[in-house]
Length: 113
Image (cartoon, rainbow, N blue to C red; front, side, top):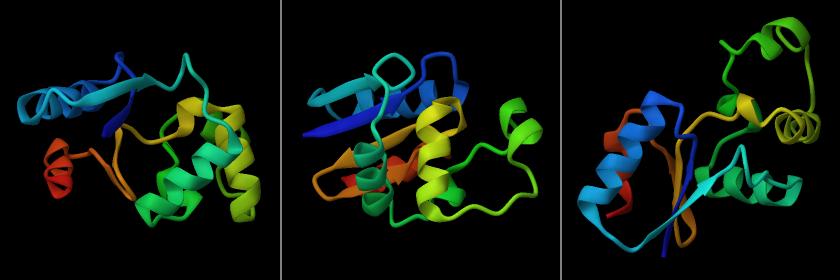
């Protein structure tokens, strides 16, 4: 089963969803700004992505620039920050079994097939 963590207001996320629709019908969409991720879920996603939390931060967001830019945090602290401010999470994230990819560009999703 494939899961896409998606934000319908994001152009890159919509492109990832469209690519996924063209590949398969067997997937689940999680609008993570409505169904918020827990620390445990985000930590698991980061493991499947093989990424550090800071690598998945949207640094262009105002909340990042105002509160976090230039500051050092541990991985655990970044996860808490991301859970509290889910808009900071890069998207879309697509998961298949024990592997995940960041769908920017959307073609990255092809790695799962």
